[in-house]
Amino acid sequence: MDVNVKTEIYADGIGQIHFAGGMVRFDFVTLQPDADGKSEPTPLCKERIIMPPQGFLNAFNSMQNLIDKLLEAGVLQKNANVADKKK
Image 1 (cartoon, rainbow, N blue to C red):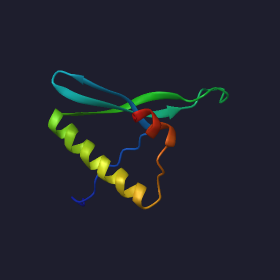
Image 2: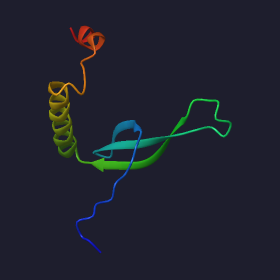
Image 3: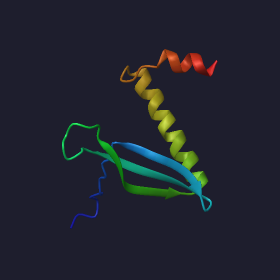
Image 4: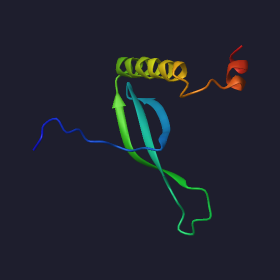
């Protein structure tokens, strides 16, 4: 077995982020279609990541750096409505 192989987890998004027991908890969700296929998919919690507050801050900073790089590369665009609300 290759020790360099990492487990990959897919998520459609984060359902909730909350602070409990001194830890930050991320509930990752996948979108599950209804049996009839006519209604909107329902978010279903599949995985939870729990980290200390300092780990959360480090992760946030890493994500912010990546967002900045994606904006510079033109992959993402700032939403003018969000920028106006922050003023």
